[in-house]
Length: 256
Image (tube, rainbow, N blue to C red; front, side):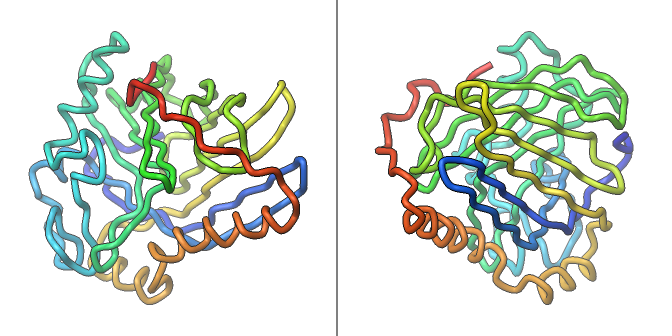
C-alpha cells in the first residue's frame, strides 16, 4: 500500500522483456525511474539540487514531455481525463517516469497512479513509440487498498513495435508502490501469449545523494533506453520476425 505522505522516490531495478512468438526473444536492462507527486512538480517544490523542473540539470523533469505536452501543469490534464471517465479529482497523483539526464530522455511508458486515502482509484498509461506518436489509456479501478496486483486490460490502439501488429490486447498488472514497485504488461494476440514486459524496482528516498549514486551506476541510462530499443529491434529483424508497417495513429490521443 502506498504511503499518504510525501513519498517521492527513486525505484532502482530492472526492465525485462520476453517474447514468445514467432521467435523467442528475451532481454533485461538495469534502469531506475522517478516516482513523483505531480503537485510537487507543478509547484516546483522538490527542493533538490540535482533534479530540476523545466530547467537543465543533471536530472530534470520537463512538463512538456508529459500530459498535455505544452508545458502546462500535469494535475489539471490528468483530472480532465479522469473526469471523462466519470471519476472525481483524486487526492494524490504520482507519475512514474525516466527523468531527463543532461536534458535527454525517452519514455516508452509513463504511468500515473491516482489515489484517495491510499486507495488506487485509477491508473493512466501514457505509451509512446519511436515514431513520435503517443496514446493514453485511462483505467478506472475499484479503489482497493491492497498489496495484491490490480488486473486490468485494454485493446491496443496505437502502433508501438514494428514487429507486432495492431490486433493485440494489453493485460496490465500493477501493485501500489511501497518498498517495491512492480509493473507487468502482458500482450496477447488471438488470446495467446505474445509478449511480457515488466519493471521491478526497489524504493530509495528521493535525495540528492541517491540521485548522484544512480547517476554513477547508470551514467548513460536515458540514452541506453533508446539505443536498446533499436538494438533489440535489429536482433528481431535478424531472427526473421516479420516487419509490420506503421499504420496511422488513432484520431483521439486518449481512450477509456
